[in-house]
Amino acid sequence: MTQRRTQRKTQRPRWSMFPLMHENVSRLLEVDGLHFTFHDLDDDVSCVQTYDTSIMGRFSCHNQKCRSNGWTSKKIAITVRMYEGERYNARVYYQRCKVCTLLSKPILDDSYADRVAYRLKKWRGVVMEPQKFSGESKGPHQKEFCEGCKAGHCSEGGRMDELVGNLSRLSMGGI
Ligand SMILES: [Zn+2]
Ligand SMILES: [Zn+2]
Image (cartoon, rainbow, N blue to C red):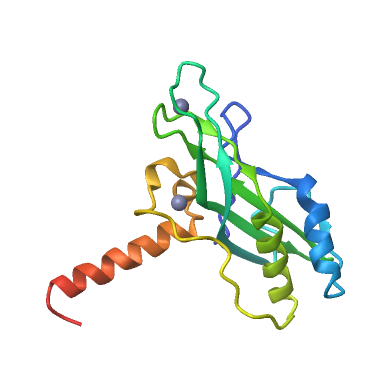
C-alpha cells in the first residue's frame, strides 16, 4: 500500500502517534542490542516496512452530555512502520463512542511498547517465541466505531472479513 493518507488540519484527528512511549520501546529493544529512533513524520510513503496489528487500552468520551463512562478495548488498531537509518513510528487509531459516536483518543497500556518492540525485533531478524498480546475480545469487532477499519489498517477488521467469508462458504456446502 503506497497511497498517501494524510489528515487534513481542519478535521478532528482520527489517529495519533505516541512519541512519549519511545522510551519504553527503547528499553525493550536494548535487551536485544537494537537502537531505533522515533521518526516524527507520520509518513506512509518512505517507510521500508509496515505492519497492521492491535494493542490494548482505554477510552473516555469527552462529550459532557454523553452518558458513556468510557470503555476498554483489546483491539485498538495500530500501524507499525520502519524507515531507513534505524527509525520507526507507529500510528494508533482512535475509536468512536458507541453511545454518541464522538471520536476518542486512547490511553495506552504496556501492550503498545511490547507490540512495537516485538515487530521491530522481528524485522531485524531477532528470533523470538510467537507472542499473543491481546486478549480475546467479546463478540465481533465493531467496524463502525473503529477508525483503523475505516482507514483500511485494522488487522481485526480484515480477520473478521475472512471469518465471515469462510463461514458463508461453509454454509453453502462447499469447501
Ligand atoms: Zn459518548
Ligand atoms: Zn477495526
